[in-house]
Image (cartoon, rainbow, N blue to C red; front, side):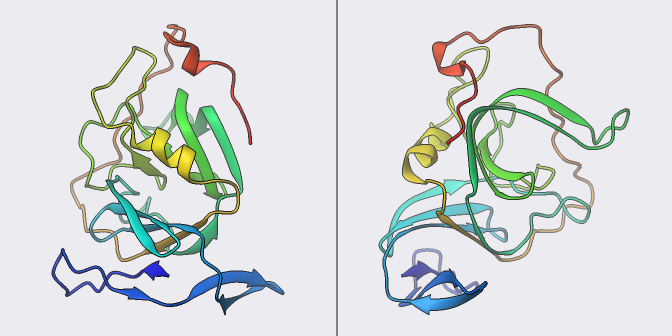
Length: 200
């Protein structure tokens, strides 16, 4: 079963619906099988991890900033995983350009948009990204961040093919711009955990 938030219901109520979606002949159809699922609630900036319809973990996230960098809604599947990624994007020479080494536990589900650890983000629960879903991580090139190891947990929980269901609406943030990414650093990794990228 998928956790489907009812936006007007109390926070402690977790309604579920007895169906799943799978790709069949290029479209989605209900099926009866149970599996792991990731639900991202843009409205409340939370990620829900379910295993066979049971809510296993709730994680605060930072999704895309409205209106330019909103995270897409819909049903997606993880198609590529990179343990230690180097992300580059945006228009060079503008404030929207980023070039970040050592982005941990990147799990791509839509083009260049991924669920990943964000060691430069110190306040989750509000939109701060250029469209990706940033989650807390205890890893950074400088050592432990003091944040929960949610990104690593998600890496162990999910796999290629895990559904990513994005619902809700990004809260309006007229005065907030995406959190600036750190500048490329000449510092090398401080831990063997930041070794060569591993693609699964």
